[in-house]
Image 1 (cartoon, rainbow, N blue to C red):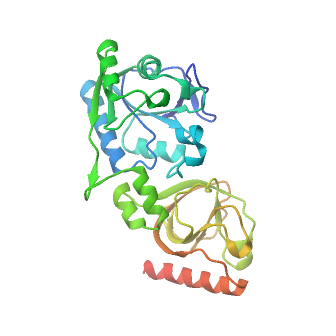
Image 2: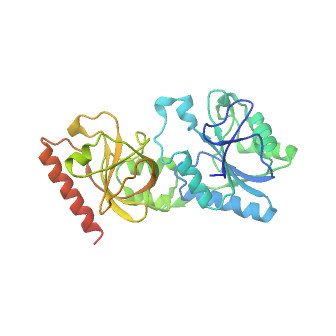
Image 3: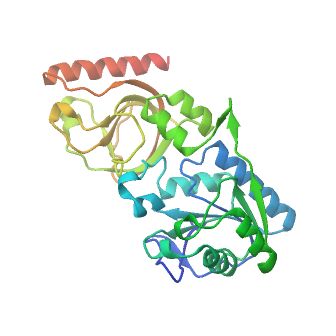
Length: 314
C-alpha cells in the first residue's frame, strides 16, 4: 500500500517493511490515535478530517503508532489487538483518508516531550494546518500534553485544533476497550453494532501441523493470531466474502496445545491457500473450546459444527 508510511523522527527509527519518510509533501489536516478496530467512533473522527481537508484544500492524514504504546511501556497490561498494522491502515484508507503514517513507538520515542511532539512531528514533519482530536486526547512524555496546550501552540505555530465529542450508541461511548470486552465474551453481534461491520481479520495462511487434514477437515492456519481479542472456541465464519467456514480459535486442548492459533475449515473449497492473505469474517460464536476423550469424539463434534454452519446459510 503506497498510502501507508512510517515517519522517521529524531527519537525513533522507521517501522520495518514500510516506506520511510522524513516529512509530508503537502500541508495537512491530521488526526492522531491508535485507531485499533477502526470502529464507528473512529470513523466519525475520520469523517471530520475528510470534511476539513476538502474545505481547506489540504491533504487528509492519520497519524498512528505501532506497536500499541502500552505494549512498550507496560507489557503486562497491554490489550489484545483488534487489528494489526495493515488491517488498520486498510480500514482507514477505505474511509477516504489520503495518507496513513505510523511512528515506531519504542522507549526512545516515549521520551519525546509534549511540546517537542507538536513542534517536530505535527508541524515540522507532517505540516499540519488543522488538527482534529478526540475529547480525551493526551500526548507526549507520560501523556503530559492536553488539548489546551495544543491550542496554545497552534496559535503560535499556525494550526487550528478541533475537539470532537464522544460517539455514543444506546448511551454507550463507542471505544476499542468496549469492543474488546464484547469479543472476549463471544458477543459478536453486539461488537458488530459498535464496529459498524462484522469483526474480521486479514492474515497470511501459513503451514500448520496437518492435523486437520489427517482428521478429514483440512484447515487454513493463519499467521500472528496469538493476541486476538476473540473468546476461545468455535465460530461460523465467512472467508473472502464468498465462502462459509468453521473456525477454531484456541490452544487445541485435545492435542495438549499451548499456543493460541486460528484454524479455518472452508466449506466447498478446494485449493492451496498457502502464503496467501485471506479475510476471515466472524459471524457467530458456536461453542467454547473443549478437550475430547477421543479422536472419534472430536470428529463427531466437528461434523456437528459443520452441519450447524450449513444450516445458518440455507
